[in-house]
Picture (cartoon, rainbow, N blue to C red):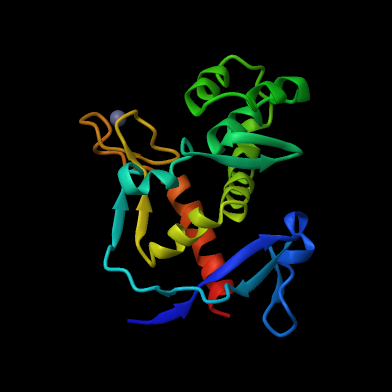
Length: 202
Ligand SMILES: [Zn+2]
């Protein structure tokens, strides 16, 4: 089993003087255009990167944090939302006033409201890029989730579901069984994990 040191990730925008690591311990990298600090936590526990799970199907239970519905602070644009889902639903609207309303909503409320807003005309073209930015923000600003995501190792991530979503995930109902889901959410999560893994190990 490969043991690696535990690292903390702090985006420059959040850092305080106390967070700045001493010379020689830190490295500043750019992650998708954004500068980030990577440095070993002093006295941090050893963590194992090895993982026996090869596939994670369905983002429930201990893997609920992979779901966009998982409650956590998510910064997008200049607004802070209560989940990735709320940030995503808000992004459908071109109106800042409208988007601000989503900041107070739970994931379910935001999903419902997202069907009532005037959707930006280029939504289908931009939505994959928007969710990627939102997911990057989610994991950048929630170090506990970032470590959990890394802990999935090389497992394939698929949001199996029963609500016929074959774009972000893969519906397993009788009717959809013959249609393999595109698994866009899982693919993005794996891509983010692999990017972070590179920075973590380097
Ligand atoms: Zn279905």
